[in-house]
Image (cartoon, rainbow, N blue to C red; front, side, top):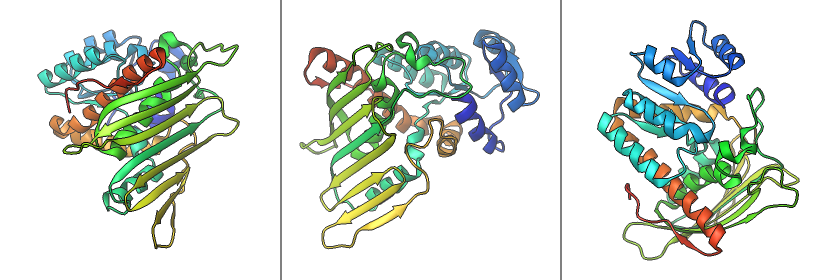
Length: 338
């Protein structure tokens, strides 16, 4: 993800961001970093980097998820702003501790929520903001894949190992779809009901398909916005399909096509030119995310919405695994930023 997603986006924003140092335990991967960023100072560990680099502004963390908490904590203690891949952390206590530390150090803590900036999702959100679908009542998000993402050039397929990934498809794709559902529903997460599929001879020993029913509650409302999320690594085809049902219309996303249907109105079709299912690194989507991160660097308080999204994801992830294990609906719990 660093090489295929973050590096191209950072190089495209080189008038704003400059990579001065890299921490990477693999000698081969350090050499790759030195090719991308000539003159970069490369270290075999984050500890060595932080010990020697005293004038950095931010850290961009793209390690496997199990290392996120410790890396973020070290960087915040060194008074660095932090941009980190999803999932930010697995436990709400860890999230609360990092959010508190970021506030104490007056630094931004930001999660890579790049799917918000996928052209089809940008268009759908624009139509919602214009009120063309009316009040949102229900959201559906479907992600169909035939295997876990395998990024070319990666040192290991860490998604295959729950000790590194933290879980299966709900941890991997679920985080993206949780914040998308939150952004489309525009309400605090209330509850989740989740069920998993563990196929026979599952070498990964993690869930490979996941079905979730969620509820979000808007301020001042007693009727929740509902959401349905289906994720699978077992599909014969690769595609994304989404729908937003409102009081005035329906918005449908078929990969790169956005369709708006309203009663008594002709169907409107928007071609965005970029599929939601196209690849797994999405460097062009990172550009919009980096603009948002840059604003947070200029004013750390402006990153609160990203923290709110991340907290919603942590809460739903935790409650989702509890729900699948218990076989019943689970409350999202009390949250700091809601």
